[in-house]
Length: 456
Image (cartoon, rainbow, N blue to C red; front, side, top):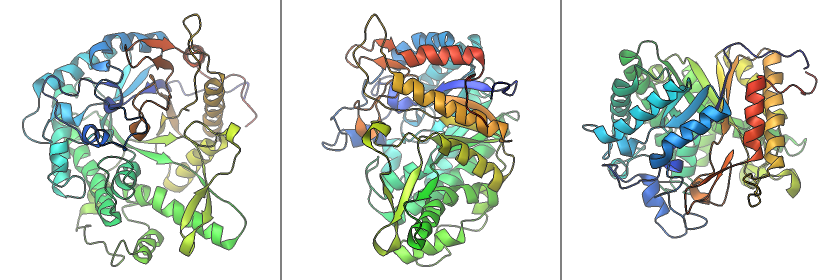
């Protein structure tokens, strides 16, 4: 790939989310979020930490913008907190909360950094959860109202919008498996939540475009190519099931206007649906969900190796030794990124794509001479960027790459135990400490490509 050239408008960026970095949970009118409530329950978060303070970005945002400028990135993906903008989930917006994002967007613009704004990165207001949350259809209208309020304030300066981050995680981890907020274990409620996330995406897209006609609106999905654990027919069938439930259950409605028939049958077989005609899908829903996307965001961390479990249901198996895993227990598998990007383009057409998250958690040593040494993270980012370049060389319309994450942060149910940042954070003081990966990423952004890539 010595002669590789990225598109002229390729955007290099980093990503964060409000709940994970802002802190100031009870200040300036912000309401309680479902993650504030979930983290307060003993046992829900690995180290017992809570996101009340986390990275203190609400107070240190100006310094963080300077770090973005130092990195040389052209884009910053961040999220607005629904609880800060609309403390009860609907009604009149909290002007003070919008003021914060107004200042942040102005600073990004002044630094020539494109804002990529995510409306829902998992932190729904607790008051709205108590009125039914995502399993309730009423939440779709509330989300559209929230999108409209943010767009009315920021739509003159924000061009790129993400409605939802990883609907699968919200629906399955939060409503079926109970390991994320709101902590439910109800597969039927999870299916309703997933559908309403998609429907609210369509409604929010309409709200944004009616207020900002030049807006580029997308949604972010998580991808994890599934490979069979063996050559057995049962394992191959399990891969098909996994793909239907994890990928196509969301991509098909968004891009084809229908739920995949095999996945509908799987849900009936599992007892999660009474029939292949879900009662929560009403006339016209799928047309609204299929509102044209300007781009699709892709979050990639690893592949999934799948074997047939009890009754043939798919189960993930560990396919690599410990030294080839991140601290999340995920295999370091760069070819999966190329595979995922090519598959989306092959199956769904030439929709512009952005890698909206890619990164790794490793145990970082203490800082020395003002820097943290993290060679494994550097290697992870390098090899995945090579994989992204390979996909572009093969015709994938990839328009940008956002490293996860700018900062070590509150990593959901893992608390402060898993660190993904290009900058380390002392959670007691808020101090940011640059890592070698920040230096490497800065150099790579300046070069515009990873120049020592493998053959295509």
